[in-house]
Amino acid sequence: MRSVLGSIMGGTTEFAGNFVPRDECVVSFFDSTVCVGTGRGVDEGRGPCACPLVHRSAHRGQAQGPLHTPRHPLSLRKDEELRQREAAFHMGSTVQEDILQQLEALHREAEAALAQANSSETTQAWHSEYLGRKGRLTGILRNLGSLAPEERPLVGKVANEIKVALEQALQERQAAIAQAELEAMRRAESVDVTLPGRPQTLGKLHITTRMLRDIYKIFAEMGFQVYESPEVETDEYNFQLLNMPPGHPARDMWDTFYTTTPGQLLRTHTSPGQVHAMRQYAPQPIRVIVPGKVYRYEQVTARSESMFYQVEGLAVGKHITFSDLKGVLMNYANQMYGEGREARFRKSYFPFTEPSVEMDIDCVICNRKGCPICKYTGWLEILGAGMVQPLVLQYNGYDPTEFSGFAFGMGPERMALQKYGIDDIRYFYSNDVRLLERV
Ligand code: FA5
Picture 1 (spheres, rainbow, N blue to C red):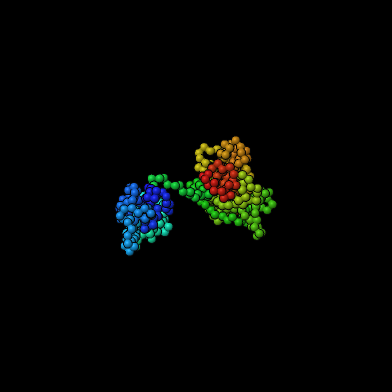
Picture 2 (picture 1 turned 135 degrees about the vertical axis):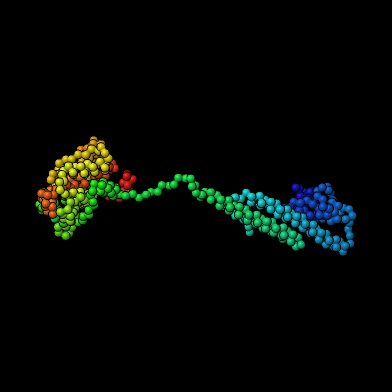
């Protein structure tokens, strides 16, 4: 809108912004164009307005009409004071109105902006912009100083009402946003009971333990009980009472670890368990299995460990034959590996059995084609066995003319290689949990 003073002065006088001195013509602080004397737009009149006030700057040097007739100086001063007061009043009213309009506009704008705010962050930003210390409401109220003192309360009251209303609206909006955020969080975190459960990684028994338990079960069904025997043995029990006196060449098959106590060693096989059992039960019949760790000072390979398990078997009684041994071992192999698995007996030699055999089963790793596990034979030895040597019976409390017996010693890890298709015995004790995933 064109400045009323610009219009009156024909553009000849420059005015800074929209500020007009109070004693001249009222121009809105914010672009209003109302003449304080008539209430009509001064540029509507196209000439001197009909207001009772002197438009001094507008009519400077152009005394026109009765209002501008020179008067007595005293009367002039009175007029001037009145005019100034009225001018001040009218100018103040317009400024006040403008501020009120601005407040109202700010109120509407703030409400609209608040409706768009949809998060805690945006409501905080909104508060800073409209109600903060350097916010827009405060900015408008800085103009209060330009109001007459009697006008300030109304503006202050309106501003305060708007402030309270906006704060109230802010609170409601924040509550609504918080509720929505909570709902969203609840939805995101809600448990879908129809989803399938996550599988838990369960611990498993070590393969050796599983093999041992399977072995116990199979032999328990055939009447064998578990007999425990020490891992630290004497030379006498590990060798001599098993018909291997000092210097016996068969000792070379079982190079062992010795303790610092002379004559004491880590057992190389579970066969000393036979001795302990016979000495404990003689002359009663015996049917035991003796499980446990054994130790050998030998090269570790894919099929041989230096520490491994064995399960010894011993049956002593009257009329026990090799057929009993064979029947027991075939029954065991069928139960352990399943019916139809091929097994074979090869003659062998052990000082504590006569005759002696070794039992092999067909190699599942290579399907009898030959591999490092079966030493390229297609067969894997799982145990040594035989009829208990008469001298051993005699050494340990049984009369060999009356009693006979069979014994066997099997390696659970070797058997597990076959049962589970594991291609290296070194996995068993290298603490690699992937081994457990194989079974
Ligand atoms: C013996 O130890 C005899 N005491 C077995 C025996 C008992 C024969 C009773 C007659 C009567 P041998 O050394 O072959 O035998 O071992 C028996 C079984 O233990 C083997 O068939 C094999 O299954 C297992 N075995 C032997 N050496 C190792 C090794 N280094 N690592 C893993 N398993 C082995």
